[in-house]
Image (cartoon, rainbow, N blue to C red; front, side, top):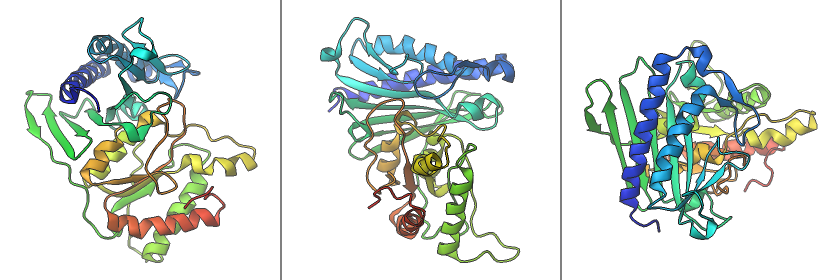
Length: 342
């Protein structure tokens, strides 16, 4: 177990707040065209935009200090080809105590165009060598980076073993209020939010068809003049987890890697998909009562690498899982996308 994990949580919260303030300030002082400029195409993980460099600089500054107490392997975008850095400088893997995987800005695209809040995501795990994976994370934290017109910012955290907490920060007057996670207790997807993610061209058609058929098989054909359920394509995995944790969404699925074999048969490539740093706060959702699985219905257990593809499915509660999971499984099998689904 991570030593002095409560002190580590305090340090990580301070880092998150420093990143939040720096990014908000950059948004206030810079034009959209400046923040959305591409500064790196071939870095490990995702495309790097100018706004990402703001958060990365703060991250490294603070982690140099944090690592003096918790020698760590930092895993994040912007750290070169491997996406990994041993801290303090000069240490080697034999001195590493913890792995900290971070997404300094999850939801960059929505934030830089001031469409949706982004999130800072962090998961910490005891170092178990190359096999350290998402199931080893014992402490997770996510902090909202608000839009300029938004004065409230939420933070959620969890410690393995049942502790989950939250706070709502008012950036106008500096006040803080407790925030209690409360996933939906609904027993049906009817008249609720839920969807399969299809953010980018290339996979939208196939995934949309699965989504439509799933809803029809569960709720029946669409009736004239009525809506059965709703969707919200929030291009931010941490934001999607937040929507499940706070009871806004009933189910969500990001299955982009699952359709890759189909795309390959058509001579096409997958493009961007979810990575481990995007889902490194799954512990918070789990401790709050949300059920997050991989495409096989099992816990997320991907190694802590920046470029590993991740598919995930989230359910607000066991009843929703029981309603959605069997139908989704059957639809994937029909299309030959099950790839060993159990």
